[in-house]
Image 1 (tube, one colour):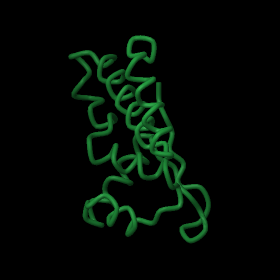
Image 2 (spheres, one colour):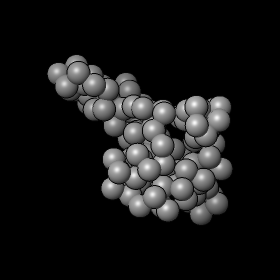
Image 3 (cartoon, one colour):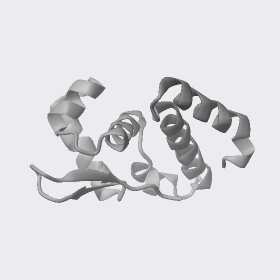
Image 4 (cartoon, one colour):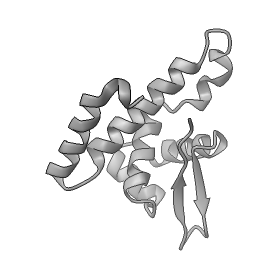
Amino acid sequence: MVYSNQQEYYDAIAASTREGQSGPFIDFMLREILNTLRGKVSDKVSDKVSDKVPDKSELAVLKLLTDNPRLTKIELSEQSGISEGSIKKIISKLKSAGWLERVGSNKTGYWLVKYHS
């Protein structure tokens, strides 16, 4: 996936370096992962697995949690502009699909973002 998009990969690394944070690189990688997953899903099974591929709001939550795995649901809501109720549903869906795991307790734990191939 990186080989076929080398220039975008290098541009994302350069942008992350310029900005002093990993956001542009994470955006690039999540977009490529999503495109790869979508490309592997055939028309026959797309309806069965489409709920396992993160949508735009789910990708936004995954990005925020990759940058700061100790964010609370309230902080996720504030930073993403997504309602707290929707954040709870998104987290539940991401956990069910295997994209997200809670490690430790609600007060002292953190979110583990899992990447699929």
